[in-house]
Length: 422
Image 1 (tube, rainbow, N blue to C red):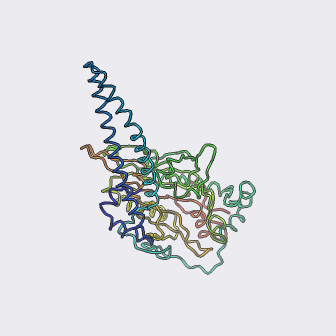
Image 2 (cartoon, rainbow, N blue to C red):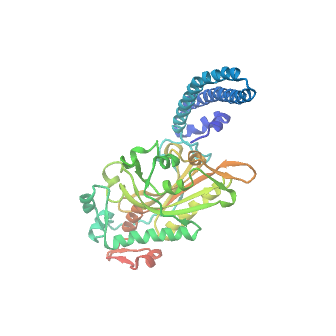
Image 3 (cartoon, rainbow, N blue to C red):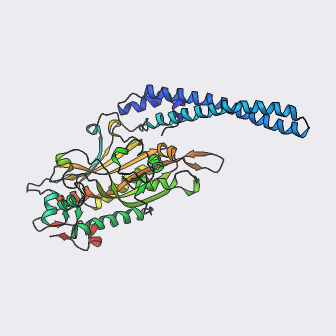
């Protein structure tokens, strides 16, 4: 969530940069600044009445001590007459503050200067790509390979839960677990501390990282307890530091965690959702960082290089995209997407997003840094997938198929205990 003070001080700049998202926010931003002016005016009136009431209360005490009870009673009557006005102003202040918060929540993050204006994914910038080997032999898609080698059962998942809930079996289950451990170990080796968070979060947590009120339609909601199944480990891990003031020496904070993830909307229809392409439940290993604002973009580059190194070890063809304004997530200032190439489907599959949210999340979270000189500023938060498993497995299965079976990348041999699925 943007700060009103920042919007007011940089009004034209905020409008210009938000235009990268192909939406004109001028009217909404003007409403916000006007509402804030109204809020300040009401706050001033309310504070004035409270101050007057406090002064009267002190004077009444002095009069009673001086034996001037009649004068004290007169002032008491005046004090009582101020209460309805104070209550009225308090209600107005609450209503305006709530309206201001709602309007602020409708404004997305400001794209970083590196983000280009664009309408959709076709306008994203490719900043890195490996070569795709050309193979004339017939490539079998992962859903057919999964059935052939009895490693993933989509029909059984449909029977148990519905579409979008596959069952991993035999070497498929072992491959899944191996990848989780591999990703966690790679993250830990780079200084990330492992966290195993809850899979259910409350509304405050969903609001803190920006899933609510923007993406409630994509989240599974448990009504009786008013809890949400997490769409990513980013939500519970980042919310560890909600309503926190961190000492500057406590930074950087580097966390990683594996969780199942749940999303109601599996996307479009046809080949886009077939097999492992889009699921309602999937496994993912996440990395989260809380940083000093002056270092967050250096850290972002480090995170991108870290995910890149993992994909290189998996020997998968991949590319890195910098998302344009029209494809940028609501809470993100800049995002790099990683996509692996699916030979059988002849298309790119997203497996990771690495984002810098700058202070957008921390303003919602009330997460600040204490610099030790009476200065407190909002922290910067970053996160990335390292990595999401379903499409990694799809690419591994399709790209490593041979006449004898599916070969396993060397980096995973120590985890799987086998070199081929046959």
